[in-house]
Length: 162
Length: 145
Image (cartoon, rainbow over all chains, first blue to last red; front, side, top):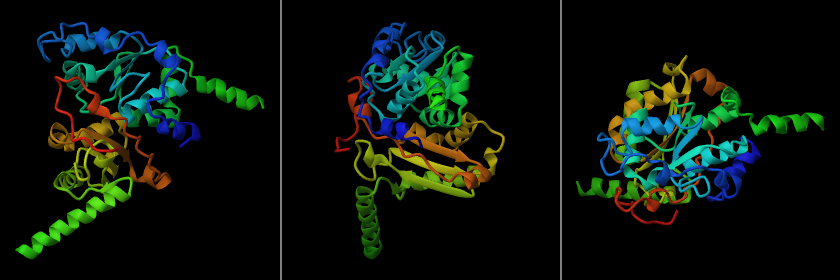
């Protein structure tokens, strides 16, 4: 694994700075349903509510904590990988703030764990898969399809120049 | 009968001590054994490693809440990572609906494993559900992580 990513693993919720500031909404703002209703009644965990969230932006993450302060190592890994690629603008939803959303997102994707990463409204996987995509170059390609240029491409270019 | 109970207690204590010393422990408890058996049956792996990493995540040693599995199986051939992980989840539906909160998965074909047997280290705990909304599931037992 690259030294940069190894350093990222050791970060203890230290993802302060621009990644957090650019973020538009946390779950408190993002849960459009009334929130009291549980999974199926039109609450924040309903299929419709989750669908709206995953389609709201090209890059959507359901995690524990926030990009500025992840509260789970696996969620932090997702934040750090996005940060490495220079993805500044994405939606992150803190499932710890909303138990209905926490269950609803698992029902929606039929995936039992958090974090969950959605690209262009499509579920791509959790932390393990995102790490794999980062390591094998797939993430750069997927971001390109979304019109997002990975910062790592520029890093490579700089190295070539030297 | 008493002797076998003592033997079990000794084994459990030894596993706990090992867990404290190492980063993770080979999963010795009932949940770990169930995970191993189900993955064996569902995927017939050529290599299988099941680690209990619960004590690294705000749980006592032997909590059996967080696992990391390495599954090497020909059944994964031709499947993208998402589908491979879904196969693993499918085999462990009961555990994931029950005590298991987290499951790190490495899923490779024998060819891929032969070419690269490295496994990324699991990320450090950052407190997780101890920080959750008060109305949600009850927090796990407090412990140093």
